[in-house]
Length: 72
Image: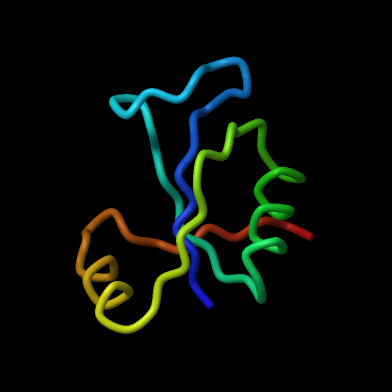
């Protein structure tokens, strides 16, 4: 499944809508997606949203859409 992860760049930064960024990744579960991001970045994760159906189609039309892959 594809997940959209909303985050702040560092764990020290309090969440602010204006500075929230996002990335897309493929993972088996939401828990596995969170673990991937936490193990490979210093991001402060705000929210993880599963994308499927029309929601995924809409996101894939965004020119900024690309799947993030981490080296395992």
